[in-house]
Amino acid sequence: MIKQILLRRAAQAAFVAWGVGTLTFIMMRLLPGDFAYRIAAGRYGYDYVSQAAAEAVRADLGLDRPAIVQYLEWLLNLLRFNLGDSLVSENPVTQELAHQLGSSLELAVFASFFALLIAVPVGLYAGRHAGGAGDRLSLMVSVILRAQPVFVIGLLMVLAFSLKLGWFPVAGFGSSEYLILPALSLALTLAAISSRMIRNSTCDVLASPFYRFARFKGLTEQQAFTHHASPNIALPVVAFVSIQAINLIEGIVMIESLFSWPGIGHALAHAIFARDVPMIQGAALVMGLIFVAINTVADLIVFKLDPRQREETLS
Amino acid sequence: MKADIQLRPSQYLGAALLLFLLSLVVLETLFWGHNPASQNLDQVFHAPTLAEPLGTDQFGRSNLARLSSALQTSILMAVFSVLTSATLGVSLGVVAGWKRGWIDRILSIVVNILLALPGLVLVLLFGALVPGSFFILYIAISLVLWVEYFRVIRARTITVMNSPEVEASLLYGFGPWYVFKRHLWPACKKDIYTLACFGAGNSVLALASIGFVYVGLRPPHAELGLMMVELFPYYSDAAWVLLQPLTAVILLVLGFHLIAGGEHE
Image (cartoon, rainbow over all chains, first blue to last red; front, side, top):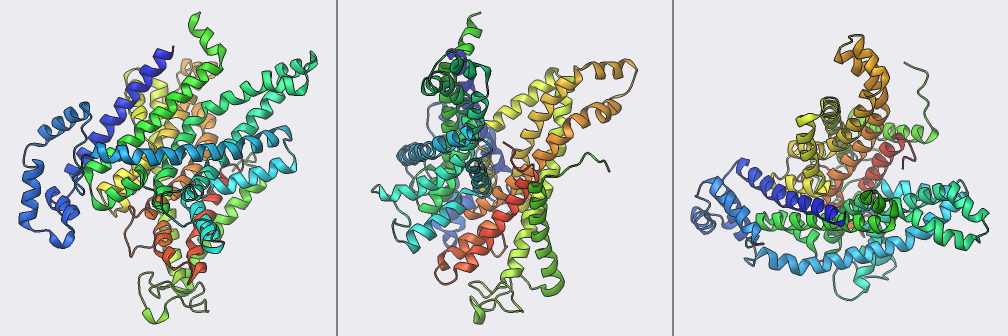
Protein backbone atom coordinates (compact mmCIF):
# COMPACT_ATOMS: atom_id res chain seq x y z
CA MET A 1 0.00 0.00 0.00
CA ILE A 2 2.82 2.39 0.90
CA LYS A 3 4.39 1.31 -2.35
CA GLN A 4 1.18 2.18 -4.16
CA ILE A 5 1.06 5.65 -2.60
CA LEU A 6 4.67 6.30 -3.52
CA LEU A 7 4.20 5.03 -7.07
CA ARG A 8 1.14 7.21 -7.63
CA ARG A 9 2.92 10.28 -6.32
CA ALA A 10 6.04 9.50 -8.34
CA ALA A 11 3.89 9.40 -11.47
CA GLN A 12 2.44 12.75 -10.46
CA ALA A 13 5.93 14.18 -10.01
CA ALA A 14 6.85 13.00 -13.50
CA PHE A 15 3.68 14.65 -14.82
CA VAL A 16 4.71 17.93 -13.19
CA ALA A 17 8.13 17.86 -14.79
CA TRP A 18 6.81 16.96 -18.21
CA GLY A 19 3.85 19.36 -17.96
CA VAL A 20 5.86 22.40 -16.90
CA GLY A 21 8.52 21.81 -19.54
CA THR A 22 6.12 21.14 -22.38
CA LEU A 23 3.87 24.03 -21.51
CA THR A 24 6.70 26.56 -21.40
CA PHE A 25 8.18 25.09 -24.54
CA ILE A 26 4.97 25.29 -26.55
CA MET A 27 4.15 28.77 -25.35
CA MET A 28 7.59 30.14 -26.08
CA ARG A 29 7.23 28.88 -29.67
CA LEU A 30 3.73 30.28 -30.08
CA LEU A 31 4.75 33.72 -28.96
CA PRO A 32 4.93 36.47 -31.50
CA GLY A 33 8.35 38.00 -31.99
CA ASP A 34 11.81 36.52 -32.13
CA PHE A 35 12.75 34.42 -29.14
CA ALA A 36 16.44 35.31 -29.44
CA TYR A 37 15.69 39.02 -29.26
CA ARG A 38 13.67 38.59 -26.10
CA ILE A 39 16.40 36.59 -24.40
CA ALA A 40 18.98 39.12 -25.52
CA ALA A 41 16.82 41.81 -23.93
CA GLY A 42 16.73 39.79 -20.72
CA ARG A 43 20.49 39.31 -20.74
CA TYR A 44 21.77 42.70 -21.77
CA GLY A 45 18.85 45.00 -21.02
CA TYR A 46 16.38 46.40 -23.53
CA ASP A 47 18.63 49.24 -24.57
CA TYR A 48 21.45 46.97 -25.67
CA VAL A 49 19.55 44.65 -27.99
CA SER A 50 21.00 44.57 -31.47
CA GLN A 51 21.03 42.20 -34.39
CA ALA A 52 24.47 40.99 -33.32
CA ALA A 53 23.39 40.36 -29.73
CA ALA A 54 20.36 38.38 -30.90
CA GLU A 55 22.50 36.31 -33.27
CA ALA A 56 24.98 35.62 -30.49
CA VAL A 57 22.15 34.37 -28.28
CA ARG A 58 20.75 32.28 -31.12
CA ALA A 59 24.07 30.57 -31.77
CA ASP A 60 24.79 30.20 -28.08
CA LEU A 61 21.52 28.45 -27.28
CA GLY A 62 21.16 26.57 -30.55
CA LEU A 63 17.84 28.24 -31.30
CA ASP A 64 18.29 27.84 -35.04
CA ARG A 65 17.72 24.08 -34.86
CA PRO A 66 14.27 22.52 -35.37
CA ALA A 67 11.89 22.89 -32.43
CA ILE A 68 11.37 19.17 -31.98
CA VAL A 69 15.12 18.57 -31.59
CA GLN A 70 15.34 21.24 -28.95
CA TYR A 71 12.31 19.79 -27.16
CA LEU A 72 13.73 16.25 -27.09
CA GLU A 73 17.06 17.59 -25.94
CA TRP A 74 15.32 19.40 -23.11
CA LEU A 75 13.52 16.23 -22.02
CA LEU A 76 16.77 14.26 -22.14
CA ASN A 77 18.51 16.88 -20.02
CA LEU A 78 15.66 16.79 -17.54
CA LEU A 79 16.21 13.06 -17.06
CA ARG A 80 19.81 13.88 -16.13
CA PHE A 81 18.62 16.57 -13.70
CA ASN A 82 20.12 19.21 -15.92
CA LEU A 83 17.83 22.23 -16.15
CA GLY A 84 20.18 24.33 -18.22
CA ASP A 85 21.87 27.59 -17.27
CA SER A 86 20.25 30.74 -16.07
CA LEU A 87 20.16 33.27 -18.90
CA VAL A 88 20.92 36.10 -16.52
CA SER A 89 23.61 34.83 -14.16
CA GLU A 90 24.77 32.03 -16.49
CA ASN A 91 25.08 29.66 -13.53
CA PRO A 92 23.41 26.25 -13.75
CA VAL A 93 19.73 26.55 -12.80
CA THR A 94 19.94 23.55 -10.46
CA GLN A 95 22.75 25.19 -8.52
CA GLU A 96 20.84 28.45 -8.07
CA LEU A 97 17.64 26.64 -7.14
CA ALA A 98 19.37 24.37 -4.63
CA HIS A 99 20.64 27.47 -2.90
CA GLN A 100 17.20 29.14 -2.83
CA LEU A 101 15.33 25.99 -1.90
CA GLY A 102 16.89 26.09 1.57
CA SER A 103 15.52 29.56 2.34
CA SER A 104 12.10 28.66 0.97
CA LEU A 105 11.92 25.52 3.06
CA GLU A 106 13.00 27.44 6.13
CA LEU A 107 10.17 29.90 5.58
CA ALA A 108 7.67 27.12 4.84
CA VAL A 109 8.58 25.13 7.93
CA PHE A 110 8.36 28.12 10.24
CA ALA A 111 5.10 29.26 8.66
CA SER A 112 3.56 25.80 9.10
CA PHE A 113 4.79 25.67 12.68
CA PHE A 114 3.28 29.09 13.50
CA ALA A 115 0.09 28.07 11.71
CA LEU A 116 -0.24 24.98 13.90
CA LEU A 117 0.51 27.06 16.96
CA ILE A 118 -2.44 29.30 16.10
CA ALA A 119 -4.85 26.85 14.49
CA VAL A 120 -4.76 23.94 16.94
CA PRO A 121 -5.76 25.79 20.10
CA VAL A 122 -8.25 28.03 18.27
CA GLY A 123 -9.80 25.08 16.41
CA LEU A 124 -10.02 22.85 19.48
CA TYR A 125 -11.53 25.63 21.57
CA ALA A 126 -14.08 26.56 18.89
CA GLY A 127 -14.97 22.90 18.38
CA ARG A 128 -15.51 22.26 22.08
CA HIS A 129 -17.64 25.37 22.41
CA ALA A 130 -19.37 25.16 19.03
CA GLY A 131 -21.91 27.90 18.50
CA GLY A 132 -20.47 30.01 21.31
CA ALA A 133 -19.03 33.49 21.07
CA GLY A 134 -15.47 32.24 20.59
CA ASP A 135 -16.56 29.96 17.77
CA ARG A 136 -18.39 32.73 15.96
CA LEU A 137 -15.52 35.16 16.45
CA SER A 138 -13.01 32.68 15.03
CA LEU A 139 -15.33 32.06 12.07
CA MET A 140 -15.55 35.77 11.37
CA VAL A 141 -11.78 36.25 11.57
CA SER A 142 -11.23 33.23 9.35
CA VAL A 143 -13.67 34.48 6.68
CA ILE A 144 -12.02 37.89 6.63
CA LEU A 145 -8.49 36.46 6.48
CA ARG A 146 -9.46 34.15 3.64
CA ALA A 147 -10.99 36.98 1.64
CA GLN A 148 -7.67 38.59 0.87
CA PRO A 149 -4.51 37.69 -0.90
CA VAL A 150 -1.72 36.71 1.46
CA PHE A 151 0.35 39.74 0.45
CA VAL A 152 -2.32 42.07 1.82
CA ILE A 153 -1.82 40.49 5.24
CA GLY A 154 1.92 40.84 4.72
CA LEU A 155 1.56 44.50 3.71
CA LEU A 156 -0.58 45.29 6.72
CA MET A 157 1.96 43.54 8.96
CA VAL A 158 4.77 45.63 7.48
CA LEU A 159 2.75 48.81 7.88
CA ALA A 160 1.89 48.00 11.49
CA PHE A 161 4.93 46.23 12.94
CA SER A 162 7.82 47.59 10.90
CA LEU A 163 6.86 51.09 9.89
CA LYS A 164 4.62 52.21 12.75
CA LEU A 165 6.01 50.26 15.68
CA GLY A 166 9.50 49.55 14.33
CA TRP A 167 9.69 46.13 16.01
CA PHE A 168 10.86 44.19 12.97
CA PRO A 169 12.88 45.02 9.84
CA VAL A 170 10.83 45.63 6.69
CA ALA A 171 12.56 43.14 4.45
CA GLY A 172 15.71 41.17 4.19
CA PHE A 173 17.32 37.98 5.25
CA GLY A 174 19.73 36.84 7.90
CA SER A 175 18.94 36.74 11.58
CA SER A 176 15.70 35.37 12.99
CA GLU A 177 13.99 38.75 13.28
CA TYR A 178 13.72 38.83 9.49
CA LEU A 179 11.84 35.55 9.55
CA ILE A 180 9.03 36.48 11.91
CA LEU A 181 6.86 38.77 9.79
CA PRO A 182 6.91 36.71 6.57
CA ALA A 183 6.34 33.45 8.43
CA LEU A 184 3.57 34.98 10.49
CA SER A 185 1.79 36.43 7.43
CA LEU A 186 1.84 33.03 5.77
CA ALA A 187 0.79 31.32 9.00
CA LEU A 188 -2.28 33.52 9.42
CA THR A 189 -3.59 32.56 5.97
CA LEU A 190 -2.93 28.90 6.63
CA ALA A 191 -4.45 29.02 10.10
CA ALA A 192 -7.57 30.76 8.78
CA ILE A 193 -8.51 27.58 6.93
CA SER A 194 -7.04 24.86 9.13
CA SER A 195 -8.51 26.23 12.34
CA ARG A 196 -11.98 25.79 10.85
CA MET A 197 -11.08 22.29 9.68
CA ILE A 198 -9.90 21.36 13.18
CA ARG A 199 -13.03 22.92 14.67
CA ASN A 200 -15.39 20.89 12.43
CA SER A 201 -13.42 17.74 12.98
CA THR A 202 -13.50 18.25 16.76
CA CYS A 203 -17.24 18.92 16.66
CA ASP A 204 -17.92 15.72 14.74
CA VAL A 205 -15.74 13.57 16.98
CA LEU A 206 -17.12 14.92 20.27
CA ALA A 207 -20.67 14.22 19.04
CA SER A 208 -19.78 10.72 17.82
CA PRO A 209 -21.06 7.52 19.49
CA PHE A 210 -17.54 6.17 19.97
CA TYR A 211 -16.43 9.19 21.95
CA ARG A 212 -19.54 9.12 24.11
CA PHE A 213 -19.01 5.43 24.70
CA ALA A 214 -15.43 6.07 25.80
CA ARG A 215 -16.70 8.57 28.37
CA PHE A 216 -19.58 6.27 29.35
CA LYS A 217 -17.31 3.34 30.12
CA GLY A 218 -15.56 5.50 32.69
CA LEU A 219 -12.59 7.17 31.02
CA THR A 220 -11.86 10.69 32.19
CA GLU A 221 -12.33 13.48 29.73
CA GLN A 222 -8.55 13.73 29.39
CA GLN A 223 -8.11 10.00 28.68
CA ALA A 224 -11.01 9.85 26.25
CA PHE A 225 -9.70 12.86 24.42
CA THR A 226 -6.13 11.61 24.11
CA HIS A 227 -6.95 8.07 23.06
CA HIS A 228 -10.20 8.34 21.19
CA ALA A 229 -10.71 11.89 20.04
CA SER A 230 -7.31 13.23 18.97
CA PRO A 231 -6.43 10.65 16.27
CA ASN A 232 -9.90 11.01 14.81
CA ILE A 233 -9.67 14.77 14.85
CA ALA A 234 -6.28 14.68 13.17
CA LEU A 235 -7.31 12.36 10.35
CA PRO A 236 -9.47 14.67 8.20
CA VAL A 237 -7.18 17.56 9.04
CA VAL A 238 -4.12 15.78 7.69
CA ALA A 239 -6.05 14.55 4.67
CA PHE A 240 -6.87 18.19 4.01
CA VAL A 241 -3.19 19.10 3.81
CA SER A 242 -3.14 19.08 0.00
CA ILE A 243 -5.32 22.18 -0.08
CA GLN A 244 -3.08 23.76 2.53
CA ALA A 245 -0.04 22.88 0.42
CA ILE A 246 -1.48 24.87 -2.48
CA ASN A 247 -1.97 27.87 -0.20
CA LEU A 248 1.49 27.49 1.26
CA ILE A 249 3.25 27.43 -2.11
CA GLU A 250 1.17 30.22 -3.61
CA GLY A 251 1.72 32.19 -0.43
CA ILE A 252 5.46 31.66 -0.60
CA VAL A 253 5.64 33.26 -4.06
CA MET A 254 3.83 36.34 -2.80
CA ILE A 255 5.44 36.64 0.61
CA GLU A 256 8.97 36.10 -0.66
CA SER A 257 8.49 38.82 -3.24
CA LEU A 258 7.08 41.19 -0.66
CA PHE A 259 9.79 40.63 1.95
CA SER A 260 12.65 40.06 -0.55
CA TRP A 261 13.17 36.63 0.97
CA PRO A 262 15.79 34.88 -1.19
CA GLY A 263 13.80 31.75 -1.96
CA ILE A 264 12.27 29.96 -4.92
CA GLY A 265 9.21 32.22 -5.08
CA HIS A 266 11.32 35.34 -5.16
CA ALA A 267 13.50 33.70 -7.80
CA LEU A 268 10.44 32.88 -9.89
CA ALA A 269 9.16 36.45 -9.76
CA HIS A 270 12.61 37.77 -10.65
CA ALA A 271 13.11 35.27 -13.46
CA ILE A 272 9.74 36.24 -14.90
CA PHE A 273 10.72 39.86 -14.81
CA ALA A 274 14.03 39.15 -16.54
CA ARG A 275 12.41 36.66 -18.94
CA ASP A 276 14.91 34.05 -17.81
CA VAL A 277 13.08 31.04 -19.22
CA PRO A 278 15.23 28.20 -17.79
CA MET A 279 14.94 29.77 -14.33
CA ILE A 280 11.16 30.17 -14.74
CA GLN A 281 10.88 26.54 -15.75
CA GLY A 282 13.14 25.40 -12.95
CA ALA A 283 11.39 27.38 -10.23
CA ALA A 284 7.93 26.27 -11.37
CA LEU A 285 9.19 22.71 -11.54
CA VAL A 286 10.60 22.80 -8.00
CA MET A 287 7.36 24.29 -6.66
CA GLY A 288 5.36 21.54 -8.32
CA LEU A 289 7.68 18.93 -6.85
CA ILE A 290 7.46 20.42 -3.34
CA PHE A 291 3.70 20.28 -3.74
CA VAL A 292 3.83 16.60 -4.67
CA ALA A 293 6.24 15.92 -1.80
CA ILE A 294 3.95 17.55 0.77
CA ASN A 295 1.03 15.50 -0.49
CA THR A 296 3.06 12.32 -0.35
CA VAL A 297 3.94 12.96 3.29
CA ALA A 298 0.27 13.66 4.04
CA ASP A 299 -0.74 10.39 2.37
CA LEU A 300 1.78 8.49 4.47
CA ILE A 301 0.69 10.12 7.73
CA VAL A 302 -2.97 9.34 7.01
CA PHE A 303 -1.93 5.78 6.29
CA LYS A 304 -0.13 5.55 9.65
CA LEU A 305 -2.95 7.21 11.58
CA ASP A 306 -5.80 5.20 10.14
CA PRO A 307 -5.74 1.47 10.89
CA ARG A 308 -8.88 1.02 8.75
CA GLN A 309 -6.96 1.91 5.60
CA ARG A 310 -4.22 -0.59 6.39
CA GLU A 311 -6.65 -3.42 7.12
CA GLU A 312 -8.64 -2.74 3.99
CA THR A 313 -5.63 -3.49 1.85
CA LEU A 314 -4.87 -6.71 3.72
CA SER A 315 -8.33 -8.19 3.25
CA MET B 1 -38.82 32.33 -9.88
CA LYS B 2 -39.13 29.77 -7.09
CA ALA B 3 -39.84 30.19 -3.42
CA ASP B 4 -37.03 27.89 -2.34
CA ILE B 5 -34.39 30.57 -2.72
CA GLN B 6 -33.79 31.61 0.86
CA LEU B 7 -30.79 33.85 1.35
CA ARG B 8 -28.98 33.97 4.66
CA PRO B 9 -28.07 37.33 6.21
CA SER B 10 -24.40 36.78 5.35
CA GLN B 11 -25.37 36.31 1.71
CA TYR B 12 -27.32 39.57 1.75
CA LEU B 13 -24.23 41.24 3.19
CA GLY B 14 -22.11 39.80 0.38
CA ALA B 15 -24.55 41.03 -2.26
CA ALA B 16 -24.60 44.44 -0.61
CA LEU B 17 -20.79 44.64 -0.71
CA LEU B 18 -20.73 43.82 -4.42
CA LEU B 19 -23.53 46.28 -5.15
CA PHE B 20 -21.63 48.96 -3.27
CA LEU B 21 -18.50 48.37 -5.37
CA LEU B 22 -20.52 48.28 -8.59
CA SER B 23 -22.28 51.51 -7.69
CA LEU B 24 -18.85 53.07 -7.21
CA VAL B 25 -18.04 52.19 -10.81
CA VAL B 26 -21.40 53.41 -12.11
CA LEU B 27 -21.32 56.68 -10.16
CA GLU B 28 -17.77 57.38 -11.30
CA THR B 29 -18.72 56.92 -14.95
CA LEU B 30 -21.91 58.98 -14.58
CA PHE B 31 -20.66 61.95 -12.56
CA TRP B 32 -16.88 62.16 -12.86
CA GLY B 33 -15.70 60.14 -15.79
CA HIS B 34 -12.02 61.05 -15.41
CA ASN B 35 -9.44 59.30 -17.50
CA PRO B 36 -7.68 56.82 -15.16
CA ALA B 37 -4.36 57.32 -16.96
CA SER B 38 -4.26 61.09 -17.35
CA GLN B 39 -1.53 62.62 -15.19
CA ASN B 40 -1.39 65.96 -13.52
CA LEU B 41 1.93 66.42 -11.73
CA ASP B 42 0.82 69.65 -10.01
CA GLN B 43 -1.73 67.64 -8.09
CA VAL B 44 0.35 64.85 -6.57
CA PHE B 45 -1.31 63.21 -3.54
CA HIS B 46 -4.01 65.83 -3.38
CA ALA B 47 -6.45 65.36 -0.52
CA PRO B 48 -10.03 64.42 -1.45
CA THR B 49 -12.22 67.21 -2.82
CA LEU B 50 -15.60 67.24 -4.49
CA ALA B 51 -13.95 67.00 -7.91
CA GLU B 52 -11.66 64.18 -6.71
CA PRO B 53 -13.58 62.33 -3.99
CA LEU B 54 -10.70 59.90 -3.35
CA GLY B 55 -7.83 62.26 -3.97
CA THR B 56 -4.97 61.73 -6.42
CA ASP B 57 -1.99 59.38 -6.63
CA GLN B 58 1.74 59.83 -7.15
CA PHE B 59 1.22 61.10 -10.72
CA GLY B 60 -1.76 63.24 -9.83
CA ARG B 61 -4.11 60.75 -11.44
CA SER B 62 -7.66 60.52 -10.20
CA ASN B 63 -7.85 57.75 -7.59
CA LEU B 64 -11.56 57.31 -8.05
CA ALA B 65 -11.15 56.82 -11.77
CA ARG B 66 -8.29 54.38 -11.25
CA LEU B 67 -10.13 52.42 -8.60
CA SER B 68 -13.22 52.25 -10.76
CA SER B 69 -11.22 51.10 -13.76
CA ALA B 70 -9.42 48.49 -11.64
CA LEU B 71 -12.71 47.23 -10.24
CA GLN B 72 -14.11 46.92 -13.76
CA THR B 73 -11.06 44.92 -14.83
CA SER B 74 -11.32 42.60 -11.83
CA ILE B 75 -15.07 42.08 -12.12
CA LEU B 76 -14.87 41.53 -15.89
CA MET B 77 -12.11 38.99 -15.33
CA ALA B 78 -14.20 37.26 -12.67
CA VAL B 79 -17.32 37.13 -14.86
CA PHE B 80 -15.49 35.94 -17.98
CA SER B 81 -13.42 33.28 -16.30
CA VAL B 82 -16.31 32.00 -14.18
CA LEU B 83 -18.60 31.71 -17.23
CA THR B 84 -15.92 29.95 -19.25
CA SER B 85 -14.71 27.61 -16.54
CA ALA B 86 -18.26 26.74 -15.42
CA THR B 87 -19.41 25.94 -18.95
CA LEU B 88 -16.30 23.92 -19.69
CA GLY B 89 -16.19 22.14 -16.33
CA VAL B 90 -19.88 21.32 -16.17
CA SER B 91 -20.19 20.06 -19.74
CA LEU B 92 -17.03 17.97 -19.57
CA GLY B 93 -17.97 16.71 -16.11
CA VAL B 94 -21.39 15.60 -17.34
CA VAL B 95 -19.90 13.91 -20.40
CA ALA B 96 -17.19 12.14 -18.36
CA GLY B 97 -19.58 11.01 -15.64
CA TRP B 98 -22.27 9.94 -18.11
CA LYS B 99 -20.31 8.21 -20.86
CA ARG B 100 -17.35 7.02 -18.74
CA GLY B 101 -14.90 4.94 -20.81
CA TRP B 102 -11.96 6.46 -22.66
CA ILE B 103 -13.24 10.04 -22.60
CA ASP B 104 -13.44 9.90 -18.80
CA ARG B 105 -9.94 8.45 -18.57
CA ILE B 106 -8.40 11.09 -20.85
CA LEU B 107 -10.10 13.94 -19.01
CA SER B 108 -9.02 12.53 -15.67
CA ILE B 109 -5.41 12.44 -16.85
CA VAL B 110 -5.64 16.06 -17.98
CA VAL B 111 -7.13 17.02 -14.62
CA ASN B 112 -4.37 15.19 -12.77
CA ILE B 113 -1.72 17.10 -14.69
CA LEU B 114 -3.41 20.40 -13.90
CA LEU B 115 -3.86 19.48 -10.25
CA ALA B 116 -0.20 18.59 -9.86
CA LEU B 117 0.73 22.27 -10.02
CA PRO B 118 -0.60 24.97 -7.67
CA GLY B 119 -3.04 27.14 -9.64
CA LEU B 120 -1.23 30.40 -9.07
CA VAL B 121 2.06 28.96 -10.35
CA LEU B 122 0.26 27.97 -13.55
CA VAL B 123 -1.21 31.46 -13.92
CA LEU B 124 2.23 32.94 -13.22
CA LEU B 125 3.74 30.75 -15.92
CA PHE B 126 1.19 31.95 -18.46
CA GLY B 127 1.61 35.54 -17.36
CA ALA B 128 5.39 35.18 -17.56
CA LEU B 129 5.37 33.87 -21.09
CA VAL B 130 2.94 36.44 -22.50
CA PRO B 131 3.34 39.56 -20.37
CA GLY B 132 0.63 42.11 -19.85
CA SER B 133 -2.15 40.34 -21.71
CA PHE B 134 -5.66 40.31 -20.24
CA PHE B 135 -6.65 37.54 -22.62
CA ILE B 136 -3.83 35.15 -21.62
CA LEU B 137 -4.53 35.73 -17.93
CA TYR B 138 -8.19 35.00 -18.60
CA ILE B 139 -7.27 31.74 -20.32
CA ALA B 140 -4.91 30.79 -17.50
CA ILE B 141 -7.39 31.54 -14.71
CA SER B 142 -10.20 29.68 -16.50
CA LEU B 143 -7.87 26.74 -17.05
CA VAL B 144 -7.24 26.55 -13.31
CA LEU B 145 -10.87 27.06 -12.29
CA TRP B 146 -12.65 24.52 -14.50
CA VAL B 147 -11.04 21.53 -12.75
CA GLU B 148 -13.10 22.11 -9.62
CA TYR B 149 -16.43 22.03 -11.53
CA PHE B 150 -15.32 18.99 -13.47
CA ARG B 151 -14.55 16.97 -10.36
CA VAL B 152 -17.72 17.88 -8.49
CA ILE B 153 -20.08 17.53 -11.45
CA ARG B 154 -18.49 14.28 -12.64
CA ALA B 155 -18.96 12.71 -9.20
CA ARG B 156 -22.56 13.99 -9.02
CA THR B 157 -23.35 12.73 -12.52
CA ILE B 158 -22.12 9.24 -11.72
CA THR B 159 -24.40 9.01 -8.67
CA VAL B 160 -27.40 10.53 -10.43
CA MET B 161 -27.02 8.38 -13.55
CA ASN B 162 -27.10 5.24 -11.42
CA SER B 163 -30.28 6.25 -9.64
CA PRO B 164 -33.62 4.47 -10.28
CA GLU B 165 -35.22 7.74 -11.43
CA VAL B 166 -32.82 8.15 -14.31
CA GLU B 167 -33.14 4.52 -15.24
CA ALA B 168 -36.93 4.99 -15.36
CA SER B 169 -36.57 8.11 -17.49
CA LEU B 170 -34.29 6.33 -19.91
CA LEU B 171 -36.62 3.31 -20.08
CA TYR B 172 -39.50 5.63 -20.92
CA GLY B 173 -37.40 6.78 -23.84
CA PHE B 174 -36.64 10.34 -22.76
CA GLY B 175 -33.63 11.89 -24.45
CA PRO B 176 -30.37 13.11 -22.98
CA TRP B 177 -31.50 16.74 -22.80
CA TYR B 178 -34.54 15.75 -20.73
CA VAL B 179 -32.40 13.66 -18.38
CA PHE B 180 -30.00 16.58 -17.98
CA LYS B 181 -32.74 19.11 -17.31
CA ARG B 182 -34.93 16.93 -15.11
CA HIS B 183 -32.34 14.98 -13.14
CA LEU B 184 -28.80 16.33 -13.45
CA TRP B 185 -29.31 20.07 -13.33
CA PRO B 186 -31.41 20.07 -10.13
CA ALA B 187 -28.81 17.85 -8.44
CA CYS B 188 -25.89 20.04 -9.50
CA LYS B 189 -27.12 23.62 -9.55
CA LYS B 190 -26.38 24.39 -5.91
CA ASP B 191 -22.80 23.16 -6.23
CA ILE B 192 -22.32 25.11 -9.44
CA TYR B 193 -23.60 28.24 -7.80
CA THR B 194 -21.27 27.87 -4.82
CA LEU B 195 -18.29 27.02 -7.01
CA ALA B 196 -19.02 29.99 -9.25
CA CYS B 197 -19.02 32.44 -6.34
CA PHE B 198 -15.78 31.06 -4.92
CA GLY B 199 -14.33 30.96 -8.42
CA ALA B 200 -15.13 34.63 -8.89
CA GLY B 201 -13.40 35.46 -5.63
CA ASN B 202 -10.41 33.34 -6.53
CA SER B 203 -10.04 34.90 -9.96
CA VAL B 204 -9.99 38.35 -8.36
CA LEU B 205 -7.32 37.12 -5.93
CA ALA B 206 -5.28 35.56 -8.73
CA LEU B 207 -5.37 38.71 -10.86
CA ALA B 208 -4.39 40.92 -7.94
CA SER B 209 -1.68 38.51 -6.83
CA ILE B 210 0.11 38.37 -10.13
CA GLY B 211 -0.36 42.11 -10.53
CA PHE B 212 1.39 42.44 -7.19
CA VAL B 213 4.47 40.48 -8.31
CA TYR B 214 4.50 42.60 -11.47
CA VAL B 215 3.65 39.78 -13.83
CA GLY B 216 0.06 40.65 -14.62
CA LEU B 217 -1.26 43.66 -16.49
CA ARG B 218 1.20 46.46 -17.19
CA PRO B 219 1.12 50.10 -16.15
CA PRO B 220 -0.58 52.49 -16.85
CA HIS B 221 -3.35 49.94 -16.63
CA ALA B 222 -5.18 50.32 -13.32
CA GLU B 223 -5.30 46.94 -11.63
CA LEU B 224 -5.79 46.36 -7.91
CA GLY B 225 -2.60 44.38 -7.23
CA LEU B 226 -0.52 46.59 -9.48
CA MET B 227 -1.88 49.71 -7.78
CA MET B 228 -0.69 48.34 -4.44
CA VAL B 229 2.92 47.82 -5.55
CA GLU B 230 2.96 51.20 -7.25
CA LEU B 231 1.62 52.97 -4.20
CA PHE B 232 3.59 51.06 -1.58
CA PRO B 233 6.72 53.25 -1.71
CA TYR B 234 4.54 56.25 -0.84
CA TYR B 235 2.97 54.72 2.27
CA SER B 236 4.34 57.44 4.55
CA ASP B 237 3.25 60.29 2.26
CA ALA B 238 -0.22 58.94 1.68
CA ALA B 239 -1.13 55.71 3.43
CA TRP B 240 -4.80 56.42 2.70
CA VAL B 241 -4.15 56.06 -1.03
CA LEU B 242 -2.51 52.67 -0.53
CA LEU B 243 -5.46 51.59 1.60
CA GLN B 244 -7.91 52.16 -1.29
CA PRO B 245 -6.94 49.21 -3.51
CA LEU B 246 -6.31 47.11 -0.37
CA THR B 247 -9.84 47.72 0.85
CA ALA B 248 -11.29 47.21 -2.62
CA VAL B 249 -9.71 43.74 -2.97
CA ILE B 250 -10.82 42.68 0.49
CA LEU B 251 -14.41 43.88 -0.02
CA LEU B 252 -14.67 42.38 -3.50
CA VAL B 253 -13.44 38.93 -2.50
CA LEU B 254 -15.31 39.01 0.80
CA GLY B 255 -18.49 39.85 -1.15
CA PHE B 256 -18.09 36.84 -3.43
CA HIS B 257 -17.18 34.51 -0.57
CA LEU B 258 -20.14 35.63 1.54
CA ILE B 259 -22.58 35.15 -1.34
CA ALA B 260 -21.17 31.68 -1.87
CA GLY B 261 -22.81 30.61 1.34
CA GLY B 262 -21.27 32.51 4.18
CA GLU B 263 -19.61 29.77 6.14
CA HIS B 264 -18.97 27.20 3.50
CA GLU B 265 -16.33 24.94 4.97
